[in-house]
Length: 252
Image: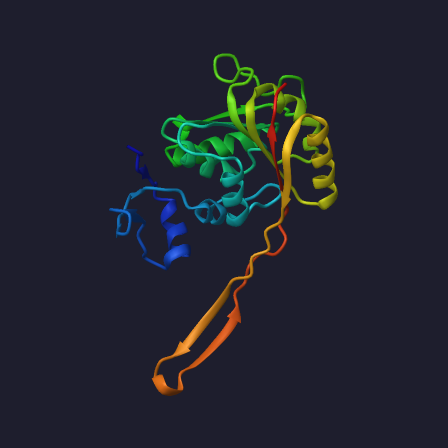
């Protein structure tokens, strides 16, 4: 049975932003019914972490995070490596996706940033599902951790690095055969370089995605059904955030 996550008090502000002042988290009672609850939620909402956390580098919004989870082929029980912990926004979603039987191993070279993220994980009651390390992703065998991460032991790898092609060798060491790799890069030139490096390193099914959402609001005047008026208007939405390049590793 999937565990319900206990949300600490700091999440109250996030729900006020998402659902309106005074709103309470919604908990799934069945496939089609939800109820308000003060302390529990069944599933992660990428927008919660996105609105809560301060960002230290490139920004990944809910659309990027949702697609990344899909491309990484994650579900409970999967083991995933994340390179570039940052604020912990993505780590939060990865952990709630692979829990309760999976695990996230996240790496960041910046020790203070790692400590901030670890506190965030403790506040979210996710420390049992996330292991955080202070390491340089480009150094040899950077992802290997005795007793936790060994060769061909993880299902997926996510990169949020300025030069992800320089860390591909480390990813290949820990990825299982047919493991998934997704790289987030802000520029198309970085996407081109990582795509070429993936092709040269034995990866297949290499694809790059850019999400450009265009949400619309539609308002109706119901005062007179026969002459109902409506207005369409575009809602605010972050435009370009980055590119997601996905690939599958085939080991010889």
